[in-house]
Structure formats: C-alpha cells, structure tokens
Image 1 (tube, one colour):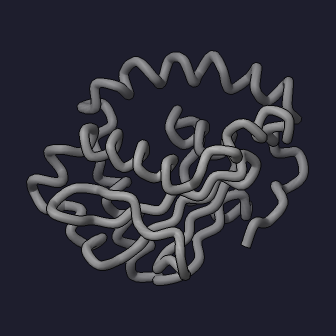
Image 2 (tube, one colour; image 1 turned 90 degrees about the vertical axis):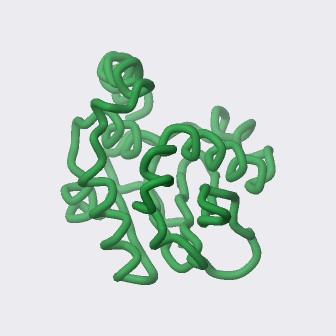
Image 3 (cartoon, rainbow, N blue to C red; image 1 turned 180 degrees about the vertical axis):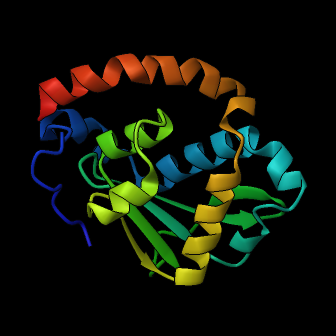
Length: 162
C-alpha cells in the first residue's frame, strides 16, 4: 500500500525516519505489543479485545517506514507474523497518529480526508474503531502525561515538517 502523505500534511523527513526503519519490524511489533498489553491490561482481562483472536492487525506509519503487526494470543497482545497479508491495515503518518493520541482530531475525520487509510476486513475495522471509541483515555495513566506533551509538540512538528 504505502501511499504518499496527502499534501499539506507534515511528514517525518527520511533522514529522521531512517534509524527507525532500520530496526526490524518484528522488533517494533514486539515492543508495541508489550506496551499495549500493559496499558490495556484491564480491557484484555475483560475480553474486550477478543475480536483480535486469530486475526492480524497492521498499523503502518508510512513516513517512518514502520509496520507494526499485532494479534491476540493467550489473552494478551503479541507481535503477529510479518509474512503474508494482514486482516486489517491501518495506515497514516506520525503526525496523524500524534493528532489522534492528543485528541486533536477524530479518526473519522482523518479517514474522510484520506489521511488515515483502513483496508481489509471491514468487520474487524469496525470492531477496532468501536473499541477505541469506547476506551476511556482519561483512565490510562500514561495518557494524562502524554497528552500535554503532544499538545506542545504538534504545532512545532507541523511547522518544522510541513
């Protein structure tokens, strides 16, 4: 897929993306799976992510050259195989994902603007969207610290990389 970022969207320069892209994608996936498993521990225990069982999700950060692949195994998020197609692919830029985490833009808006692309299993995509819509970000300890930082970084990032 690897679509170019839409015009007027800040994009991580290749020089900064190169070190990230040099690390193997399975390592990126394992690190993200570990972080999300810890963060979403309660949701995992309550079975809220069971829809990922036997399914693979790819989160591609196009301008960073990273492809995170996740699935559910033994009640926790784990890295999925990087061989073959994923059931669902969600693709965007670093800036788009930062805007979503900082709650500066709704994912639906990014989809309509074609800045966030979802391809594959539509039902799985809706389940992921519904889970994220229902997630209480305020209850996540890391988000209380991350959001103010993102609010300060986003304008600088946009100015530097537009």
